Length: 224
Image (tube, rainbow, N blue to C red; front, side):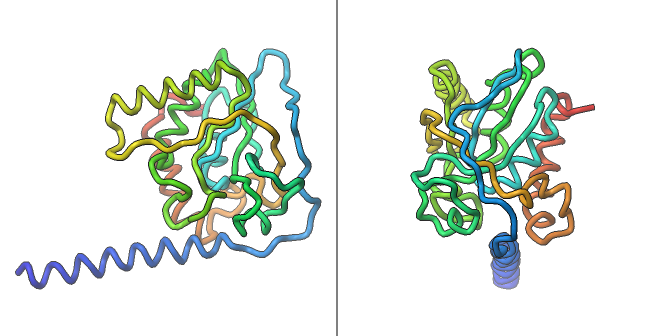
């Protein structure tokens, strides 16, 4: 019996890995026409609002998750943490710009705190895998918190300590905590990507299950 079961299990795992790898390959779409990303080294935040800049792998995924969160005013996908000015998506995907795919969030701290955002961030991607998320591999997919103040840096370290004590992950968290130095909004066709392309292969295989898990776990924090 076991001899028959083992090959079936191995085959199922191989199929799953193959599907995810194929879906990830669909992300490597050619650059479309449109303006290049524009740098934002200083962030204009409306009165009473705050900003967070986070990287947790594919920005199509993180954008889709945080857009659903109550208290979030806007989510902009883009590039952060690198050394190349005004990068294109194609350049960032090549992995030699130093940039990570990131999102910039404007939020209302009276509705959702920065620590709340971090809890969602750390529980909706894998912060224990260095320079990768699933089949997406490279420094452009690293886990990072780009802090806008000493308080944000302290909060990030505190949330990591909390999650470590709670043993949510077997392996240590490797998320980079580094001061914000600039943000380049991504090309227009990346905005609201999941909402506009729900039937795209990567959206169906990777983003949709992530969003479903997030909505189940944080039902009380979703937009009404």
